[in-house]
Length: 492
Image 1 (cartoon, rainbow, N blue to C red):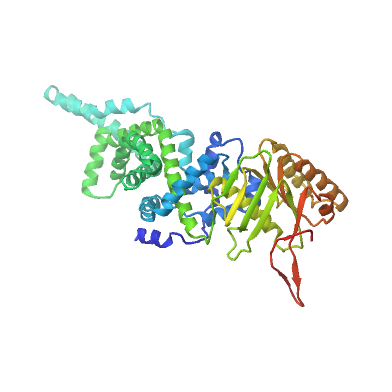
Image 2: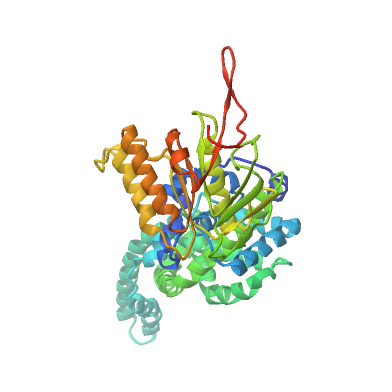
């Protein structure tokens, strides 16, 4: 059964497969709700966050998937809010049976349907309902014409025939429109049915979810009933259905229900957005609870606001995409780090490990480490730049623009965590070293914690006292090179 599948998959690591284009719909839809800082496209790509998202995604619905993505793009700078989020996740983790009971209706909502619901969220259903009054009048005319039989039978018959003809044309013209819109109706109805089912689960009281759900379900109750009526009117070819269709046609019942439903849905558009977000939040937090169960270890971070100290300290820090990671120990206080070493030795992996865990600490209140402490950071990276034929940028210009966006975003009031890989690699050695030193000096003097990798050993000397030197090394065999991926103090 579906619940047995959910129970079997709980806490199991996996690599999800999903259309990446759909995971960011909520993030793109809610620009006004973003704070002053969110993870930009370059940083998200540099940290391989699409792959990490898929690894972490234990959600059962499109709403949950969208909410998780949106959550990961917006780091928080408020400890109280992070702890509150963490408490909800821990509740679902410690109450597995309740979590699975909630996942079951969410799994029926699914991830394959509903991708078009954001067209409705943005502008409502683009259907003119001005004729609804006319349709209501036409729906009672057949009864009025029948009443004429007692007075003037010939006039009654001709009037009834005319009304029947007009209503038949209206009914047929709207039949296709109703069928076309029924998919959107069905998803909205499925959303409210899902929330109604979850609302009845014992243990759903966490975080005031029942109080949030109650007014939403009340305001959309009549719409849910109307959608059920429209679904039940689907043609099945039976004699009874033929009679129903004929009666519907005479009094325009289905047409009136349809346009009335459209009117009510558009009126309740904000309620449906709130239902979607509420379902997404619940699904997302249960997903993280399940993901945490799949980890060998993790910790709750110790995040501090301290204008006199900019730091990251971690014990046995690791990367979420590695099956057998070599963990790192790092302790940097008011000094960034410069990492040297050969290609393929693990420099970029270390940089990404720092960035990913800083992000997880400020979004999910968890770090993949035994201990993790640090500031609340604005996180920006410049790691995997490429030239752009479409924009006419060379490799060097693409990197220069990427670095400029970091420099422009520096705010001395908020520490910035800046992760750089082979800075200015797209130009000659002399200019690369001089330009890199100037940029690094500028950042260090403006409350930026830098983690940078380079092949330019000259920088290890030029930046001495401003960046701590680390290196990774290799063991050269007769026919191979072996790497231990251990981070060591000092330059390469």
